[in-house]
Length: 381
Image (cartoon, rainbow, N blue to C red; front, top):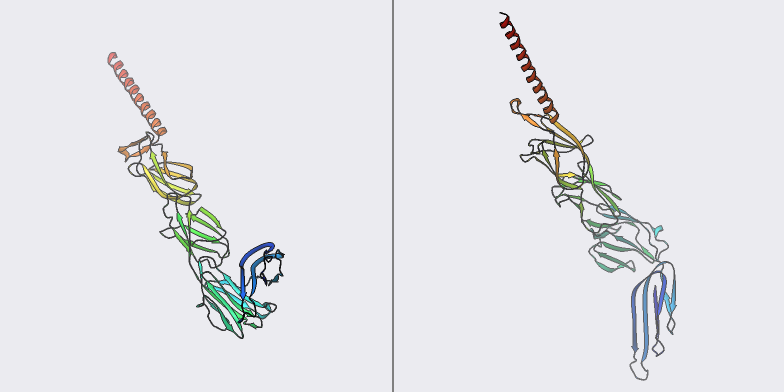
C-alpha cells in the first residue's frame, strides 16, 4: 500500500497520515520540498510538498487516517500467497500453469530455504538459468521480469501483465549437512550411537568416532531427534527450526567403575561384571589388581548387574544415572590354595569349620574307647 500527496507548500500544509490494521509493516517514507523553476522569472517558482509512505499490510482489513490538510492518494495491491512446489535433494521444483496465474497482474515464484541451504540458480521452463543475477529487471516480451537471488532466498517473476511463462521451474539449492554432535556426561564423543530423525524427512545414521552423525535435511520443518546407545534411548529433542548446522547433544552416557571387595573388604582381582537390560548385553568388564572394573561409556537406566568370581556370583539391580565409582562386595570368605584357590562363602566356611570340628571330636572318642578296651583285657590276664 502506498500513500502519497503532492500539494503546494504552505505553512498550513503540515501533518501526516497513517495506516492501521491487523499487522502493518512500515516499508518506505519520503517527505521533502520540491522547487520547480521556469527558464524565465516571468513564471515564478512553484514550491511543492511531496509526501510518500509505503506499507505492507497483513490481514483482512485496513484503515487510512489522514491528518494532513491536503488531498491524500491511496494506491494498494492485494497480494495472495499460496504454497506450491516440492522439495528435492538438489532444490525446489515448481510447476506453473496458466490457470494458476490467470487472474494476477503479476506473479512470482518465491523460495525461502532454511539457513543451511544456499540458492545457486533458477532454471526457467525455456532452459535459461538466471542464477548468475543476484538482482535485476530483465526485458521480457515487451514487459520486464524481476529476478533476485540472495543467500537462502530467491524469487523470479513468471507473469507481468499479459506476458506469462508457464512450465517447470527449478530453483537449485546447495544443502549443508546438519550434524548432531553427541557427547557423554564427561564431554567425550559417543561413537556407535544410532541417531534417528523424524519429520518431513525420516532418516537414520550412526555416529562416527568423533560422535558426529550427519544428515541432508532438504525438507524444512520441525524434526524430532532420538539417540540410542547400545539399544537404550540416551537423548531426545524436538527442533522447531534448525538454525545451526551443528547441533550439540548431551547424552545420558556415563563413565562407571565398580570396586569389588571380598568379605574382608579386600579388593578382588578377576571379577567379571556383566550388565544386561533384559536379554540384551549392555557392557562387560573384569576387575584388575586393585579390584576395579571400568566401563568407560554405559547408557543410563536400570540394569541387572551380575558379578562372578570363579564359583561365587551375585546379581543386583542398579540404576545408572551418574558417573563415578560404585562399591560392590562378593561373599568370598577365603580361598583354599591346595584346591587351586577355590573360594568359599561365609556360610560354606562356617559349615566346613563345623564339620572339621565334629570329625576331630569323633576321632578322640574312638581312640579313648580303644585304649580303654585294651587296658581292661590287660588287667584280666
